[in-house]
Length: 396
Image (tube, rainbow, N blue to C red):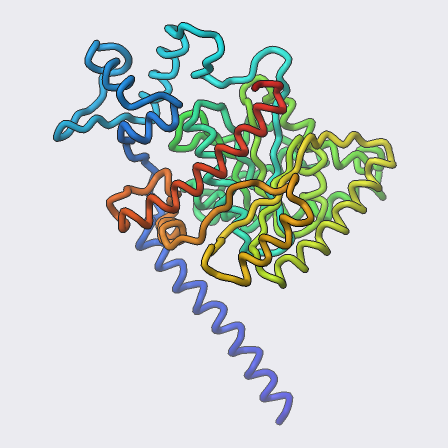
């Protein structure tokens, strides 16, 4: 009788898992049909001015003088496409009066490709939404960005409008694999709906890398296996000339995929939800991470990291325990914490249901104050990260 009850209980768990999966797929299909292709809204003059680093009056003057792209005007309001923003950057760069101003922030001679990994050991820290919004912000501010989804769950891939379970999507695994079927990175890169932003999608096959590495180390490709930590670094070198920045969304575990990403990284962004259990989990993650990176470095590998920062996400300023946790971290690691935090917002979560970011969604779909508060916190965080990258290049 006990065996029969256990069997029924196991069956019920499996049945409910299938039921939830089917319901979620139905919801996703309703919100984002399988044959859907992502478009991108147009941007109002205030947003364009912020992305460009100029005043709205300057943009109005250019438009009045017939300079720059010809943009759409509706009820007296001007709307720019993302492509027109890039065109406007080129115009401003070509006609600037001071070399101190940089409208097209592509890296110059002597400025190395920057690789930034977004990591956390614990799910629910906002890691993927952080990687998505950061990638899009950097592209909208004129950088050439490659986003790499390294999580087999492919959440970042889905946010970018690619459905790996339906699109037969190839992933970075094709570039990381140790056999003769390995493909160059350029063959797995896909365009996104934002000019200047490309993506390497993820799929479940990425998980195979976790099994391939120990097999390679113990097999005929022992030397290649022992150098597994260079595989992402070597892959991005293949497209070095095409990008300024690479943003990697790491899986929420400290396996070979994450280690390989971190050993290619010049910057590390650790997302943290300011709750006691999350910080306890992060402390364990950091101890393991430090130990592994030390072991790899002692074996002769180069640590390329120039900076790392903690980013507080899903922060509620009025939540006293959360504020205490933020104060606790600042008292110990003030120099390694971003000054700005990502605020908890229904706007971010509601947009993600439609596989959109706040940079893609129409402001009119939300209560204005809710949207403005969320986008302001995202822009502050992303702008601070952009400044860190520019400082790494030696820019002031």
